[in-house]
Image 1 (cartoon, rainbow, N blue to C red):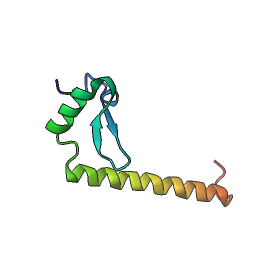
Image 2 (cartoon, rainbow, N blue to C red):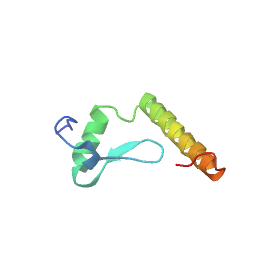
Image 3 (spheres, rainbow, N blue to C red):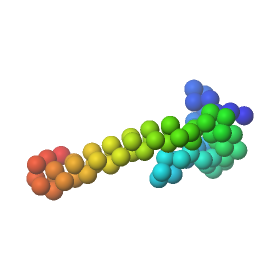
Image 4 (cartoon, one colour):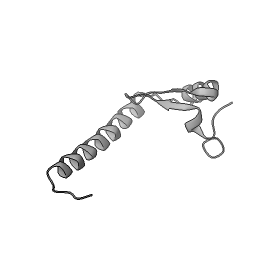
Length: 75
């Protein structure tokens, strides 16, 4: 019943919200929900780490867009 990332496709059973929280998704919702709970995928530590990564990605995107708009970057 648990998702095995080496065999299953977790992206078909789990979804992240904009705050980094994970929930079951689509046809694998039951397996996704059970795996999320057993693996503690929404622990405070993981949520903080996901938020940090998300903020780094957003900052990189914003810097690239700003650089492009200022004609500093040409790609």
